[in-house]
Length: 400
Ligand code: AMP
Ligand code: MG
Image 1 (cartoon, rainbow, N blue to C red):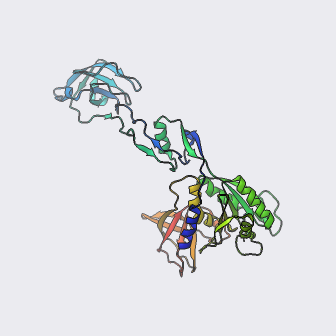
Image 2 (tube, protein in one colour):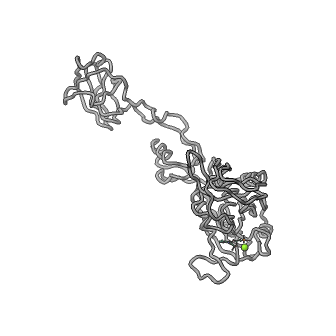
Image 3 (tube, rainbow, N blue to C red):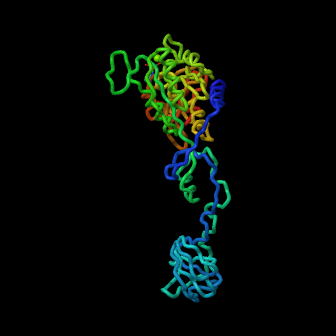
């Protein structure tokens, strides 16, 4: 655990160069806020009526009852968006609509259904308890800080920003992440598949997670297992993106050139090899202030490595202030039979049963199974040095 936390921390220590842009508020949903939003004005900005009814002085109807109703003179009608012409004085009432500014002199609004009225008169049968008036700032108080930079803008956030009258908001530019696939056996989709070759699927898998976390993935190139070509491709990818992710060629095989390519291009390696499965063969390096994350080629391993170790840094690269993995405890619904020396990461999905968060393992936990990632919403953490787990045992899980 220690080494994995250190690896995440090493990535987080790489300073990020955040760029900002201004966009229309209606496009801001899901983007990361890059400015502090202060309440320049109160919402609502004036005393407004919460109902259709009559704005009056509560004093005037204090004695009203079924037996002795009180009749007031209606002086005007105030639709929402209009301002009354007269203050409400003793013995008068203004017919008022929901959302309209309550005229001077009135301290309550009585719903019209609680009265009897004509165009010129309104009758009350009881004194009124409540105000039915929204005071200025009832929703948003003037002068308070509404949002800090780094927040992901949700539906209500965008509405609160619009409620301040802002048409545009400053957000962080989405980082663009280049994905390099390495492996002489890889063929691009849509092309003929010769014997012994496989389709290149990792960019699709990783790109989906990147997009859901607010990044722009860019499929860069498929590079054969060739030191020179790989180094060259990574260098060009670095120049064109905010971060580069490679998959494949990161272990200790004869043709695993990613570690050597890091040396060749002069990148500083932060870590290589972490004690978890699948995906622990990964490395991270820095060159020109940009991070290169070298992931295993196995789809399951690539996804686990990126999310379990790389995601906090990637969130930081988006400008987010909350970057840590969302952790919870879940109950295993099925046993996990395998013993493991290091940490084992299970792919699974979340389910609530009798108020408890359940972890349902994916059927196929093999490293190479991209299928095992379908519908996967949780990574479950089996602690190191485990002889297997029983159904009903609790494990740490991370939402991805
Ligand atoms: P490697 O990490 O290069 O040893 O690759 C491990 C396994 O993952 C091999 O079976 C590769 O064929 C497979 N693999 C590597 N890269 C990809 C990719 N981009 N898409 C699908 N499978 C891959
Ligand atoms: Mg390979």
